[in-house]
Structures are given as C-alpha cells and as structure tokens.
Amino acid sequence: MSKKEEIIRVDHITKRYDENAVLDDFSLSVHEGEVVVIVGPSGCGKSTILRIMNGLEPIQKGEVTYRGEKVDGKLGSITRIREKVGMVFQSYELFPHKTILQNVMLAPLLVQKRDRKEVKEEALQLLARVGLSEKKNAYPRQLSGGQKQRVAIVRALAMHPEVLLFDEVTAALDPEMVREVLDVLLSLAKEGKTMVIVTHEMSFAKAVADRVIFLDGGHLEEEGTASEFFDHPKTERAKQFLHTFTYDKVEREEER
Amino acid sequence: MNWEVIGSYLPLFWKAMWLTLQIGWIGIAFATLIGILVAIVRFYKVPVASQIAGVYIELFRNTPLLVQLFFLYFALPKLGIPMRADFTGAMGLALLGGAYMAETFRSGLESVAKIQTESAASLGMNKSQTVWHIIFPQAFARSVPSFVANVIFLLKETSVFSAISLMDLMFTAKDLIGLYYKTTECLVLLVFFYALILIPVSVLGDRLERRVRHAEFGD
Ligand SMILES: Nc1ncnc2c1ncn2[C@@H]1O[C@H](COP(=O)(O)OP(=O)(O)OP(=O)(O)O)[C@@H](O)[C@H]1O
Ligand SMILES: [Mg+2]
Image 1 (cartoon, rainbow over the protein chains, first blue to last red):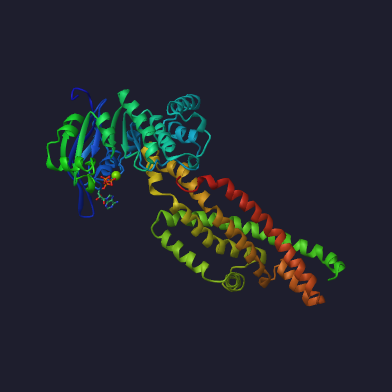
Image 2: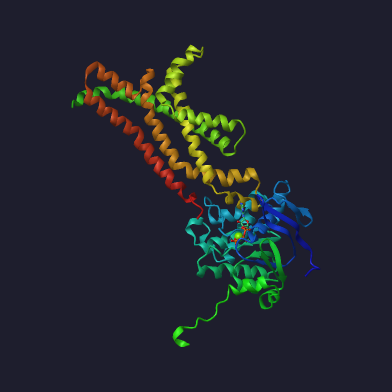
C-alpha cells in the first residue's frame, strides 16, 4: 500500500474555531487506489477533515498537500486542485436551478472547458451507470434523496477526479435509499478509485475500507485495516464506540 | 352613471395611462438597476459603499414618495438644479424603488446557502463562475415574488405624481371632477385604468414565478 504514490498528505494540522481546537495535531496520508474510511462519534471533526482536504476551511497549524502542492483556499491554485479532489456532501447540494444533466455537465464545460459533445456523452453514460438515465431532464426537486445523492456522485465523477471525498453521503437518506447509494460507492472502490469516506454505516465501512481511521475529540485514536479495527479494536474508546452499534438481545422479564 | 360622459373622457384617461406607464416603466427599470447594484454592495459588504447604501435604503424606505418628489421637484431647483416634472417622477420612483428592490435582491442573495457556494467550489469553479452560474440565478429566482410585489407597489405609487402636475391618471380624474363634477364616471374610469395597468402585471408576475419556482429551495 505505501509503495503506491501518496496523493493527499495531511501533516500535523491544528484546526480551531475561536479557541476550541477541533483537530489537534492530526495527520493522515492517502495513497493512490486506497479507500480510507473515517469513523468516530458525532462532532469529533470528521467533516472538518474532509473540508480541510478540499481547502474549504482554513487551518491554524500544519499543512495539507495534494501531490506535494499546498492545499489552501486562499491560493489561486485551489481551483485546479479541487478539479482533482472531488467532494460529495451529506445534503447533496445539487444546483436546484439546473436539470440533472446540466448539473453534471456544468463544471466539465465551465472549469475544464471540455468539448460539449464528449461531456454530454460521458454524463449520460455515468447517469446510466447509476440508473438515472430517464431523469436527465428532471430538476433536483423532482428526485428522491437517494437519486439526488447518486447524481451528486456522478457530478463529482464527471470531473475525472483523482480522489473522492464523501461526507456521510447516506446520513440524510431514508433507510431504503441507503443501499442504492452505498452500492455506487462499492463499485467505485472495486474500480480502484481513491476515496476518503466518512460514514456511520459500520457494515459498509467494514466492507469498503482498506484502512479505518478512528477519530475521537479531534485526535486520531486508532488506525488499522478494516478487520483489525472492527474485529480487534485495540483502544478502549474504539471498543466503546463500536459497541454503540451493536445491540444485545432483549431478555423479556417473563422469560427469566 | 352616464356612459356618454365615460365615452368622452376615455381618450383623456387613455393618454394619462400612457404617461403613467412610460414614467412607471422607466422608473422601475432604473429601480431594478439601482436595486441590483445596492444589493451586491450590501451583500458583499463593500467597505464605505455598503454603509452609504444602508443609509440610502433607510432614508428612502422611510419617507413617503410624495415628500421625496416635493424635495426633488421644488427643493433641487432652488439649489440650482432644474427639474422637469416627468423626469422628477421617474427619478423619484427609481430612488424609492431602488431602496425596496435592494432589500429584495439582498435577501435573495442571502437565501442561497453558503454550502451551494462550497459545492460549486468543490467542483473547481472560481469565484466569478460561482457567482454567475450558481448564486445569481438562484438569488434571482427567489427574489421574483418580492420583485413582482415591488413592481405593483411602485405602479400604484405613481398616483402621487399628480402632486407635481404630471398629467397622470390621478391628475386627470381630479382635474375632470373639479371641472365638471362627474365624480362617479371619473372614479369608475380611474379604477378601470389602474386595473388595466396592474392586472396584466400581476398575471405576468404569476407566470414568471411559476417558471422559476424549480430553483427554489435546496431540494
Ligand atoms: N463553523 C463552525 N463554528 C464553530 N464550531 C464548529 C463549526 N463547524 C464545526 N464546528 C465544531 O467542530 C467540531 C467538529 O465538527 P465536524 O462537523 O467536523 O464534526 P463531525 O465529526 O463531522 O460530526 P458529525 O458526525 O455530527 O457530522 C464540532 O464540535 C462542531 O461543533
Ligand atoms: Mg459531519
């Protein structure tokens, strides 16, 4: 794994909101073809990490680089880096005034100045891949949450990113729609796409992750392969955290 | 009610309506322009300009159009700036309307969530691409209902133009009533012609609202 080229490097960063340190001396590196899953309790800083990797949040200490180039929302190079680092949000954030096809085609045309015909062909292929061909002329408000999220993924893919960042992309969905979105992620993983995924879906995390990062209170508490982390967590905090996802069989009083 | 009287007054009211429409249209066009500029200045908190814009908005929203017109028409010439009545009418409407339109467009801009900007940014779009392709269209769509309400409000406000001797609908009605005492006929015509102006605006506004509705709300 470490022989593969390093794509994103998060180097000893500290992030504060006012005086509160949300991330403290946090480091992470993402290599080509790797699927890194970040898990941890609510408010531990998972979203913040992804946002920092996309230059959406300033940091107070440390450095984030993409292929050796500094990621900083204030630098002119940021748009070029963001072309290569795709991000999908929990709330989809499709552009409501544009059709599905326009949502997908906008950035490749505008930012990458690619040929319209080629972009359209690819957009249609990608929509077909996630089963949404017939929705191409619909507006976002006409789609279900799961459909919108699949479009958001396609929109990110249309930019040909090198890394994809997913921030709890199923958290806003009704349970029956979670699967259709996670299946898309699984198929991307199978293709060897480099991804950083924040999720609360533990069985999905276990299936998709090459490496799991367990975050607590802005610190990296534990790191390991999927089976290491899920089957043999080392730290007490990790054990506790995983325990919140399992339920013991309820013993009814009268059966005692 | 005397239909003959109505028939004979009709051309006068018709002419007056065109005056109202002409001044109204020019005033509203400039009001929209001022509104957009002031809204942008306020939204992006451009230093100094933003404060000046704030004072302008408060001043014009909180004084009657009649007072503004009097000031423009009677006070400015005393300060050595000659003013024509029709020009004054359009300018008053533009300034008053600009203050209202500014608030309309600003709240439209503010209603576009910050995360939409981030979503555009994460696709590699730069500031100006984001503003033109993502923020403005959504802000505009959300401003439409309030924009239409402003247009109707401003068209109604033109009824005070008579105070600076513009021969608009109100002036014509008052004038004719004063001369011939055909009060009922004049009032009927007045209502009719205002409705003739405002109902189409309202219908068109409704259409426009429906057309842009798909851009409302994130989902
Ligand atoms: N704009 C902000 N201003 C102040 N504090 C913030 C801001 N954004 C996030 N925080 C704080 O930073 C911490 C980390 O937030 P973050 O959104 O990264 O958590 P998370 O791990 O993604 O949580 P969740 O699982 O609930 O999404 C939280 O305690 C949150 O309250
Ligand atoms: Mg989060």
